[in-house]
Image (cartoon, rainbow, N blue to C red; front, side, top):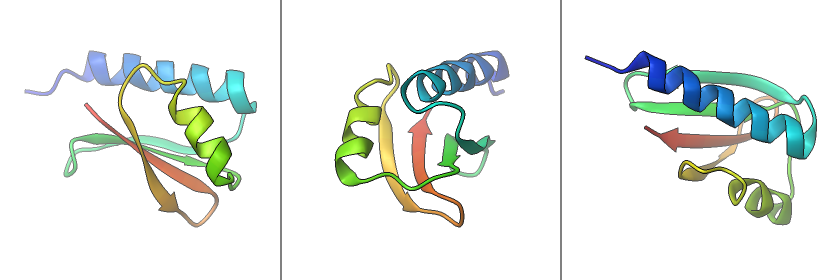
Length: 78
């Protein structure tokens, strides 16, 4: 059984960090059950340097997942 409470708390933490660092620019933040990961897509594209700086702000491990239809994508394995 999945601990959705933990997933929701992690999503809240991700949202807080993104809003603090970049402002409100989240296009999509959702749990992907197949990957067992939280996926984040921003509403804008980030340069490599910005990606690294943002990833370093998260307390949960984050990976750059490329470019989506609206912006830069990240994945958080929970």
